[in-house]
Image (cartoon, rainbow, N blue to C red; front, side, top):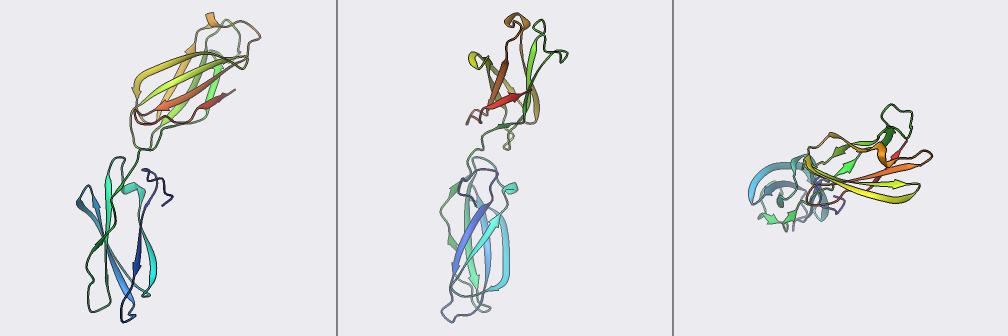
Length: 193
């Protein structure tokens, strides 16, 4: 419904229904997933002839990569119209997201003789496995990138550790995390302390 065609948005079937006698109309919808009938609904709401109606299929019924067609017909109480099909719409992948990214030292004291860990929870609405990229910044300047190609599952707590041997006192470290579901990159999320 928002035009992105992603798996977290509802599908909208817009129907302009008319009747030569100006009778009120009921609408039947048949949703096809990958060319197979998947869901039927009847809307017996006596829609006014000439009105445009938007009928929705909830995003909970769709997944990335599926092709959907909406087929509709009207009924004026006496006669059914022919079925009319929409064009096919492919549900697109939704990029993964990360929750708040937190950075701290092993015991929370932030001393230079301890490792620092950057952690977050990884999410993918399509339940795709994800790889992760972590960028480390020292005193606001890019320092290094580490790629984690481990195919993490949805809703996984992820952490990356920077060894204490990389640290000296009075440095200010930040980490930034981005997940990739093998189709799309999510957005970078910077750490908070």
